[in-house]
Amino acid sequence: MDIDEAREFIKDNPRCVLATRRRDGAPQMSPVVSALDGDGHLLISSRETAIKTKNARRDPRVSVCFLKSEFFGGFVQVDGSAEIVSLPDAMEILIDYYRRLSGEHPNWDDYRESMEREKRCVIRVTIERAGPNVSG
Image (cartoon, rainbow, N blue to C red; front, side, top):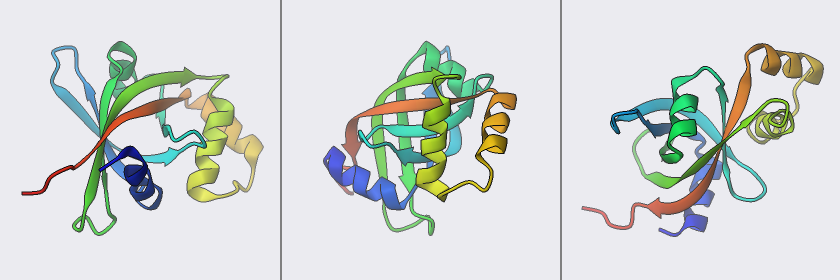
């Protein structure tokens, strides 16, 4: 599977599991929702204090497994490099993330305040590989 095929799957299936690496190299997995930005990067909303954020900041190698809502019937795994975008730079990205997944927010001022209060950030992933490429 090439990266563009993976992006097509991701657009319709935003539920996924993000795998980051603990200090000892073991995986730490978190269920998340991801959107694709206009440049094809994955966007994941997180908190500055979350373990996934700390792990990705320390070791940017991440993997994300996207699943269909029905669970069975196909999946896509992408591997890539994560960048943490913190507030205030993250605010416009968080707004874009929300719009891509949910449309317009009823009160953007409340949304912005909530993002600041929760110390939100964005884990932005550059996709470097996609699969599966074989089935068994």
